[in-house]
Length: 531
Image 1 (spheres, one colour):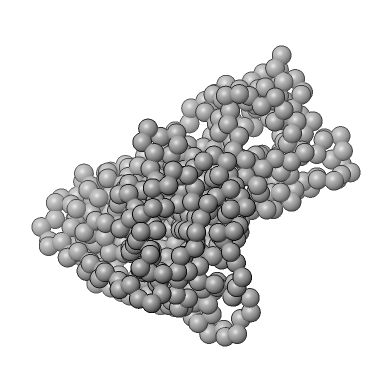
Image 2 (cartoon, rainbow, N blue to C red; image 1 turned 90 degrees about the vertical axis):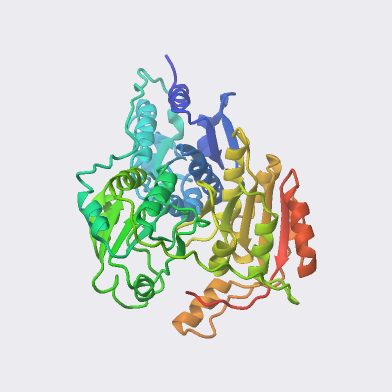
C-alpha cells in the first residue's frame, strides 16, 4: 500500500505539477524526503520570492504550479506575494507543513494555529485535511479549485506526521473545464449596443491575455475601428500596446478616468474590474450619457462594479464572439497616438531616456517583468508590449515581486522551444524586498538582465505625498545602497552606470550576456506626477 507521501506525488505527477517552488522548513521535510527524481525543486531563499517566481512561471506557462512554504510565520513572509498572485489570477497550490497531529492541541513550536485563516482573504480555498489519507484527495481538489475561473491561489496545511501513513485509495483524476463559455445570446445586449454606438471604446484587462483572447481582441477592435485602453492597475496587458488603435492606460482615479473617456457613448470593459482606483479623486464613474458593459469571468468583479451592466463570460471567448457578431464599421478609425520624440541625452540619465534605450537594445520578442512604480507610465510608453504573455507586474500594490518574477519567467522560458530574453526592471526601493531572488537566478544560470532604476528614494511615495498634500513624511530616502556589490554576493555579475553617453553600449553588451547580469542605473531623481 502506498504511503500518503507517495500518493501525493503520484497525484501531482498526473496533474503535471512536477516543478515546485519553495523554501522548506523542518515541518516540510517529512514530505520532501526521498524527493522523486522526475520532480524539480526550485529553491528560493525566502518564502516571498518563492511565491513570486511561481506566480510568473504559472502566468507564462498557463498552468497550475506547486509552492512549498514553511508553516506559521513562513506563510506570513509570503503573504504579500500571495496577494499579488490573487490579483494576477495565478493558479498556485500553496502547501505548508503543520506540526504533528498528536501535539496540535498543545500548540507546540511552529504550530500554524489558524491554518484556515492565515492566507485569507487571498486564496480561493484553504484546508487542513481531517485525516492523513485525505491529503492526496485534498491536493486534487486544490488543483481543480485553483484552475477554475477566476484562477487563483489555494492553500493546504499538511501535518508533518501524515507523510508515512498508509493511503488505502488514491483519488481518481478528474477533468474540470477551466474556462467559461461566451454565449452570443447572453452577449446580445453588448452586440446590439456596439452596433448602434456612435463612438465606442474598448477597455482590455489582463484576463484577456490569460484566456487566450489577444488576437480576438485585436480583431474586435479593428472591426469596430475604435480606441482601446488598458484597464488601470493591471499586472499584464490584454491588448498590443504597439497597435495603432491603442490609446494608453486609463488613470486609476474616478474623475480623471471618466474625463479620459469623455465623448464615448458605449464603453465595453473586458477581463478587468470596473475599476481599480487609487488615489481618490471624486467625479462621475463614466461620462454623462455613456453606458458601460462589463464582461468578466469573476462574479465578485461583477458584483462590486459601481456602474454598468455585467456579463459572466470567458473574456477571450467573448472577444471572439463579439468580433464575429459585430459588423465591420464604416467610421474612420481614430488616428494613431503621436509618436514620442527621441529623448535627448542630457547631463543625467532620465527614466525616459533609460526606457527608450532599453527599447532600442532589446530583442523584439523579449519579456519584461516590472516593478518601478514611480516611472511605470514612462516605462509602458517607451517599452510597448506587442506580443501575448510578454509583460508581467504585480497587481496588488505590495512590493517584492519584480526580481523574483523574472526568475520564474526565465525558468519557464528555459523549457520553451525558443526561449525569449527576460528583462527585469525594478526600482531601488522595490528591489530590496526580494533581493534574494538573484541567488536563484545565479544557481540556475538564468540569462536575465536585471535593471535597477536607482533614484535613491521611494519616489512613488513622494508622488503620493504631493497628491495627498502630506509634506515632511519620513523614511522616503534610500541612501547608501550598492546593488552591484549585493549582486556579486549572490553570484551575479554587474556594473553601475550614470553616464548617458555610455548607456547604449552598456545595454547592448549586457543584453547579450548568457547568464544573469545586473545593471544599476543612476537616474535623475525628479519626482513625477502621480497621474
